[in-house]
Length: 289
Image (cartoon, rainbow, N blue to C red; front, side, top):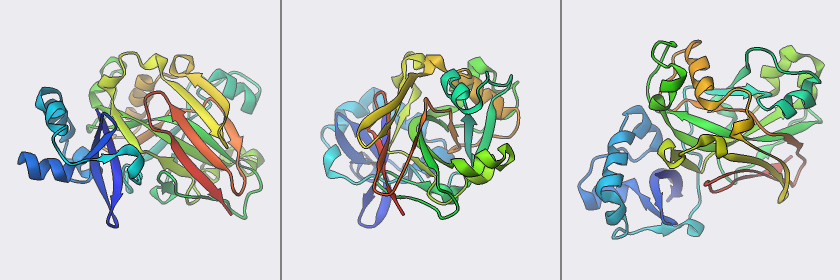
């Protein structure tokens, strides 16, 4: 099933997306006598997603057609939520991208980094260029949303990783490349500026993807596809990435993990950069100085 966060009367509210119709969780509560949280972050924190999914698959699909709804083109989306505990990333996860950046095959372990939640924006919000950099890039990436608390490989073996994942989303990772090129130790700084991370508008549960290897990810600049690849060509697969991070730190509901990009584009004032992934509504952000 698909979730989104939409902007309504100055607030951001959770909704279910079904058959191109958007139904607020608040509406479902009122008409269906439910008491679910009306913010997506709270749904994840309280682990209500499984209960909502069970309702959706058993009776919800039919009932949603009887409830007041908005059409997809009538609504303004926000990010799925604003204050995740962690935003994590994997760099150079496609061989082609690794060779582009380093000129050699990848290391035996993934390159990883973190972003602060102050870098977070949502669909249609502006990526702000910074005076500290003259070469800023954006990258489309498949995002993993954690749905359950998990720690250590004993609890999150690679084959068990799907059990702790709420679903996938679209993300854009922005980097001050000239800062990073000065010294690899500056990677964290180059990725941490305000507005340098965007995600949403959909969270799609993993049961919607019978074969995640077929998921295609594209980086689009001004409506032109610059890079495209499929998950099957990742060096570190999504479930391995979840397991890998779980060995380092406790993962909690709402944590976001970016899984790497098929390629980056240099962005300039006035550009529109986009993450397009199979089955998702495209994530689009304008660029502003």
